[in-house]
Length: 163
Image 1 (spheres, rainbow, N blue to C red):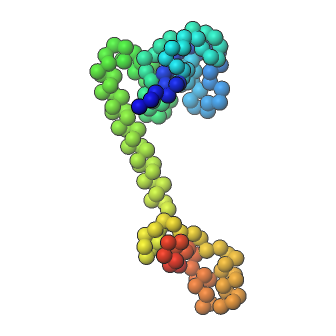
Image 2 (cartoon, one colour; image 1 turned 30 degrees about the horizontal axis):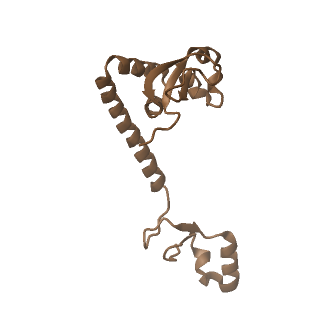
């Protein structure tokens, strides 16, 4: 797997104080990101302020995972950076738990979105559309109450069933 050119997370003490690196972040993650820079491994100078960068030892994927799991808790991030420096095995155990939790959150979010989609009662397809008011009016004008569009609200694009 090729590494992203900005896959390493480094810390800039000057940006931590000035906040130069956090423009564009939402208010809730502003403090979490303050001073932390995604950059290339060989970079030692901050691209935002020119300050000296310190290697955190963690990569961008772990940084983002910690942010998601902790809801932007800066103390947990700093504790995880310290843990990696002290005990890499314990760090990897914790990160594997965090990664599994993040994957579980993504899966539950995807299933919640898919559960809210209407499905055709005949074929089960989610490729359905709402029958427009215009279509109902035209059908009603041409065929009266015998128009299937007047009585129904949805149409399956897969099998054509209306309900």
